[in-house]
Length: 285
Image 1 (cartoon, one colour):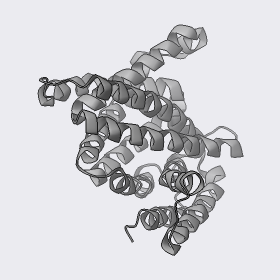
Image 2 (cartoon, one colour):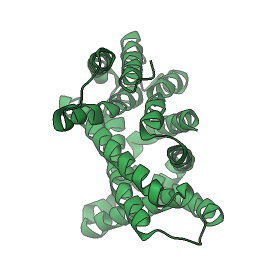
Image 3 (cartoon, rainbow, N blue to C red):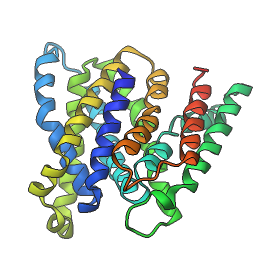
Image 4 (cartoon, helix red, strand yellow):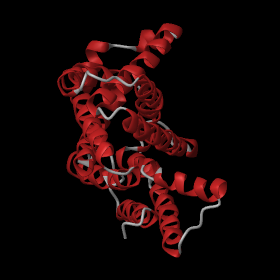
């Protein structure tokens, strides 16, 4: 389920990248959440045991939704437009390293030599990927600050995954949890629309739905798979498999986005180092 979720999400990323220049990160995030919500309510209705509803679990699902998809999507699609699909996805995928480093600094956890090799591989891979960023960006001028967009987004996702996993221990209904998270993100986006007149003026639901509804459906399917994977397995295992997404993104970008994104040997080497590094950190190699 995790690998299928990574591949499905990668296809959605490629679909968004193809038309990203015609819109902005907020519009893309809103339309993808709306498209996903349009199909999520049905599995939530059919697959949820309505006998026992956990209020605390629902609140945690909503909290995780404010982080991801709400904040994460804004950061991710901002990075996608400025860095290109392969670079953005690769830098985003380093998020498992954050929890590891926090454990060392805050909890005095000890790392094995294999863990340290993995951390160094992730760092080296990130440097190689970042070095290709100017060649993979959109038509906007490149700035190093854009590299922070996927990195900060990864932090938000890492925290959201922990909250989501705990919510599933309280209320093990993945389809319902995905729907609440999506509803929470749409609530956050509606507040932005209500408070920013310029954002409302730039929004064109009809145009953006035509461009991004397929990506929205793909992301919704990916999220359902992720929630079910989390309900069956540990966060570390699911996360370590999800970080294979940059490999899928690079393959699909090479096949479908050659005119937009340059998939260079340096980029491929960086992606492989990141994925292998995360696998070493998570103890899978």
